[in-house]
Each structure stands twice: as C-alpha cells, then as structure tokens.
Image (cartoon, rainbow, N blue to C red):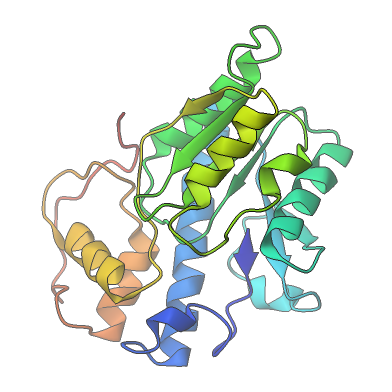
Length: 243
C-alpha cells in the first residue's frame, strides 16, 4: 500500500521537522527499500510483489522506484478500510491464493518476517489452523495483514490511524472465527519520535536486527538531519533479520 511521493501529500505528520520536499524524498526511499526487502522475501518463497497506489493518475511518480515487472494497481474506495479490502479483492481476482497487505512506512522490518508470513500463508492450504497472519506495529497499528480470502469484516468499524487498529482487527477476526498467526512486532515511521528511532537504528554500527534499508539511510544522510553520521560505516547488518 503506497502513496505516490508527491510533496505536500505524503508523510505530512513529519512536516515539520521535514519540509514537504524532504518528506516526499523519504517516502520514495521507504518504498524503494520496502520493495527491495520484499524482493528478497519473494526470491525465497516464490511470492510476487504488487504496489497498490494512490492517487490514481500518478503512475509516473513511481518511475525509478518499482523493480521491473512489479504489478501496479490503483487503489479503489473512499476510506482506508475500503481501499485495503478493494486491494485484497483485486489481487485475489488476479489469481493469487493469498494476499499480504503491507505498509510502506516500515522500511526496516526484518526480511525474515515477510518470509515467515508467505510460508505460513502457503501452508494454510494444507493446515487451516491459522487462516490469517498479523504483524503488529508497536504504535497499535499493523505493518502486515495476510489473508487467504478477502474478509470484509476485518476492515469494518476500525478506527484507522489510532492506537486501536490492531486490537480491533483481532476482535473482528475473532468475531468471524479467524485465528491469527502473529509475526514479530515492529514499528512504522510517521512522526518525529519514530523518525528519530529510525535514524538511531540506521546509524548504529554492526549487525542490525532489521533490514538495513540502504536507500533510507542514504536519504537521511543527504538531508543532513541531526543524529545520523555523515561518514560511511563499513559494517552493516545482512538485511535478513531474525525472529
């Protein structure tokens, strides 16, 4: 799920400390890293990557960001829940047996979590014990929801952009009898505190527990924001993370 990197339209909760142009650059870096991270997971699992984007008509804004062959779908619906459901419906209509809805605000999610989600969903055809997968964000939202059918109930009566999103999604799943398999909790970056957390994580020398997000790291350095070293580090994490 992605917004086109248009200044003034993306990462608005980060302006300030960023300018609208800087926020758009960071949004593009997040998306580039997320797609490269998902590419690693896809290579390990046989999954495919697609980008469900908004606003319609801004396909050109993704030039130079999307890997060759990436499916690009315009989002449908008014509210965020409607757009999530419509994206799932569109991907199932394309013939996929399972769908992971993933945010583009969490560039350092360990690759292992995406691999785990894809493998778990693939196993559901044989073992229906866990028909859905949830990766919670520590602010109360989620960075991944994986399903084997487009359950409209999972997206109804949810307080989007609140700390109750993941809890309410779990409640909706329980109401329709869906058991959830949980991934490792991670974090997204949508305000100044989480941006500082990201800067510290990417500036830390040595192996990282998450994906190394090289494009985001380079973008933060280029922006010359406080807290991120300007010199290169010779040692970084492998980018595959661990559970």
